[in-house]
Structures are given as C-alpha cells and as structure tokens.
Amino acid sequence: MNEFILEEYHAQLPVFRRLESVVLSTLQNALERNDLLVTAVSTRIKTAESLAGKLALKGDKYHALNDITDILGARIITFYTDDVDRIAAMAEQLFDIDWQNSVDKRTLHQIDSFGYNSLHYVCRLPKSIIDDPQCPQLNEIRFELQLRTTLQHAWASINHDIGYKSGVEIPQEYLRRINRLAGILEMADDEFSRIRIEISDYRRRVHQLVQNGKLDDVQLNGDTFHSYLEVRPFDTLNRRIAAINQAEIREVPLDIYLRVFLALGCKTLGDVEKLKKSCAYDAYTLARHQLGNTGLDILSSSVGVQNICIVWILQQGGGKIGLTRLFNAINGDNDQNALLAEITYEQACNLPFMKKS
Amino acid sequence: MKTEIVESGNQLIARFSGRLDTLAAVQTAEDVKPLLSASNKDIILDCTELEYISSSGLRIFLSIRKEAAAHGCKVIVRNISNDIRQVFMMTGFISLFVIE
Image (cartoon, each protein chain N blue to C red):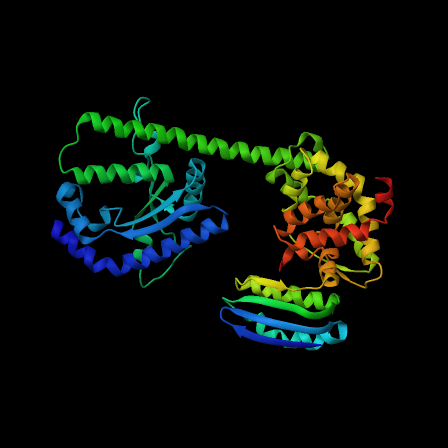
C-alpha cells in the first residue's frame, strides 16, 4: 500500500507544485489586501523521504495519497496572537475548509498543561481561485495551512530540534522545562497583544485630544507630535507667508522640530500650541522682512515653524548662540550654522519683536 | 551662467558659475540632466562661483535632490555665499541639503 502511495506521490508532484504556487500567491495577495503584516509566509511540499517516514510510522491510517492532507503545507507566522485569528478568518473566506480535519491546537490544552500552540486548517482551493478543467485535482487536493505566532514558532522549532537531535528518550524533567517555557511564551504573546491594543487606544485618545484641541493634556513625544502634525498646525502661517510673494509651498517632513520644541522646554502639545500662537505674528513679520523684496516664489512647508522657533529664541534672549543651537538641531551639527545664526540675527535685530524683548 | 559637470571617483561634481536666475535656469536645467539619472554616486553642487540663485534655481536644486534621493544618492551643496545661504534659510529648504 505504502509503495502505491509513494508512486502516486511522484506522479502527482507537478500538480502539487502548481498548487503550491497558487496557494502561496493567493495568501500573499490576500495579506497585502487586508493590510496584515506578518513575519513570514512560506510553503513546502513534503519530500519523498519525509513521506516514506510518515507512512512507516502511521501507514495503516492511509489508503491513498489523498488521505494525507499535508503533502502541501503552507505556514504563516504572525507577530501577534490576534493576527492568527484575523488570518484564520481571511483563510475561511479564501479556501474551502475541511472542518473535520482542521484543529486549533491552542484550545486543546488542559488548564494545567502547556505546549504546542498552532492553528491548523485543512483546505482546498475553490473554483473561484482556480478553475482548470485540464487539472481538476487543483480543487480536490487538500493542503494544510498552519498559523502561529513568532514565539509559538520559535518554541515549536526548538522543541522539534531537541526532540530529533537527542536520539534518546528525553527525561521527564527536561520535557517539563520545555513545556514550562511554552507557558512563559504564551504569557509573552498575550502581553505583546495587550501592549499593541493599548498603544492603539493611546494613539486614538491622543488623536481625539488633538482634534478637540485639548492639547494641554497631551505629553509631547514622537507619537503625539506626529498626530499634532496631522492636523497641519502651521498651514495658516505658511499660507500667510506664501502670500508675500504668491509662492508655492513644497511639503517637507517636520518631524525634526520635535527635538527643537523639546529643547525649547515644551512638555505638552499645549506648550507647542501656546508657543506657536505667541510667535505666529512675529514669525510672519520676520518672513515678510526676509522675503519681501526677493521675489522668491517657492517655499518649504517648514518655513512657518522655523520662523516661530527663531522668534521664540530671540524673544527669550537666546541670541546668536540660541539660533546656532536651533540650526544645529534642524540642519545637523555643522560649522556653518553659527554663520547662519549670525545672518538671521542681523536680519531680525531691527524688527519690532526684538525691541520689545 | 555656466554649468560644468565632472566625475571624480564616486562623485559627480556640478560646478556652477554666474547668476542662476530665471533666464539662465532653462539652460541650467538642461545642463544638469546627467545628474538626474546618476546612481550610486554622491552629487556635489559646487557653488563657489555661484553669485545668485532665484526660485527657478532652487527648483532645479530641489529636482536634483528628489531624483538623487530616489536613486539612493546624497546631495551636498558646497561653498555657498552668505547671500545664497540666506536664500536657503529664508525659504526653509536649508535642512533638506547637506551644506558644506
């Protein structure tokens, strides 16, 4: 019987290869469509040696090649446990699932046992994915889809490696230690998922606060500043400055101003907003003074925030040293920044806001 | 306005001399075309003899930078006069370029 199955295997290999290619591209396209980032997507066809080994072990169970559901195996390794369920839902929509032979190993453990965790679906390709009358087997052959997290995969791989390499029966004590690790990794997986959910909640809350203008409650950091920039807080000033010479505005990243605002002592987005409001008029005056008789009709979207920072530093008495620090922060440390600071200082020193300070 | 492009090791050096104003920008845009297709080379915009740059000139520098970034190349603006430095600063473009 086993020889017959192996012969059938060799005869069907070209079909399996075609099936493998369709399954892989179907999974990759669906993950991309659903915006699901994963660690790895892979497929493999069981080798003749591995199949022979399986038949030698469990030969009585199989009467034909079609009884074996993992000749073609696909595996998706996710970052988070929640993604296993999202991808499972995706697979249920893509493929015909053989529920009788599919198993969620994650739910099989007793409350006091830990070990292999993975979701195994036995699937077939529906005709909506491929329909080739010359090769109906493409819709008949079952394949196995394994879904697991990166940590589950690490545990399974190491467990497999230890089991195979030892060559002798592993004492209970070591098995217990390996399984204890499975418990720790399960906790780590849950914690990673929880952290991701909490970070998403935090981002949503921050975004909401930014949208509602409750900026005093939002601590200034990379995440919150990014949300703040999404509401385009410097656009009004930029448009006003652009109107001086009817200039076009080219978008440039403003993230580098986070460290400038932090260095200027801002602790919340409210501080940034106050600084902006208190300096916006003088920032415009500075721009008008600089650009007014130049005819320069192209500006970067950083012009407004740059001038706000310049004005604030000068109003606080930071002088040329303060401006040099500003230019070091936005242009990178450079000998030329001191010169730039001097030019800017000279330009600004006769403006009304300098007289006030 | 004159633009000269020379290759030196892993660098493409464009030497500008004269006034890069609106009129000169048309020819300069043609002259710098070899820079736009450069890959795996740093691009040096040598401004030692550049006396003036207008918005049209800035647009040329920005297009060189955009193409260079797409090809993984770095753009370095070298030896700009104080007036031109001021133009880069006033327009907010100074942080986009490495200026030496």
